[in-house]
Amino acid sequence: MRSTNLEKGLRIGAAWAVLATTVACGFMSEEEADDTPPIAPAVAPTPAVAPTPAVAPTAGGAITLSPIFIPDPQTARGQAGGSVDATSLAPGNPLCRGWVPPTPQHTLNLQGDFSTLRVIVSSSEDATLVIRGPDGQYRCADDDDGLNPIVAGSFAPGVYQVWVGLYAQGTTAPYVLGLSEMGHIGADDLGN
Image 1 (spheres, rainbow, N blue to C red):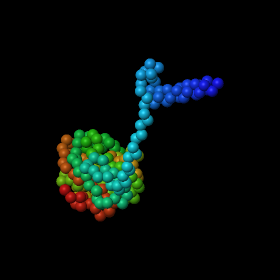
Image 2: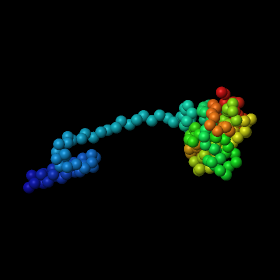
Image 3: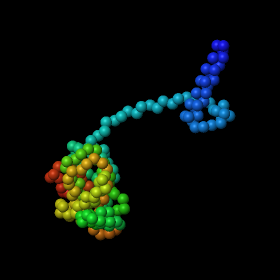
Image 4: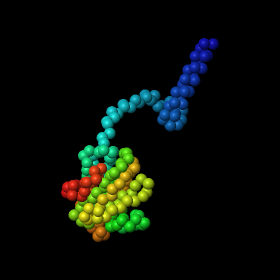
């Protein structure tokens, strides 16, 4: 009787092993299961977690900021201008002007509440600024610091899209985008 219970236990164990293999590897026929060598469990090493810096380094494109970032201002560079009329992005906002590219030049990922953040453009040309918030609302600026635009105010956490435009369709010009929590920072403080 013991051998019967032992055989029954082995069959149940084998059935569980086949079920586990089937679930882990997908369904297969009995012939495939007989030809398949047993699978050793894989153990993935745990990656080391680096501390998240207050500011992720960037060369244009994506910018990540947390409140009280250093250095202040943070800057990125790009080419202003494009083929899309900024008024088509936010038809009800009279400050959304100029010609911007079809896709934003920068994505701004804010990882905290900013009571005051200044988004500044410095360009040798008459530039415009369009920012689309995570709520779908647009903030736009033109000629706040000479011919340079500045959007300033409180910003909630989330991902913001940033376009920098020019008044002449199809033209481009280099610019510096500046981000600052200090109220006295302007276009001249961003360098060239």
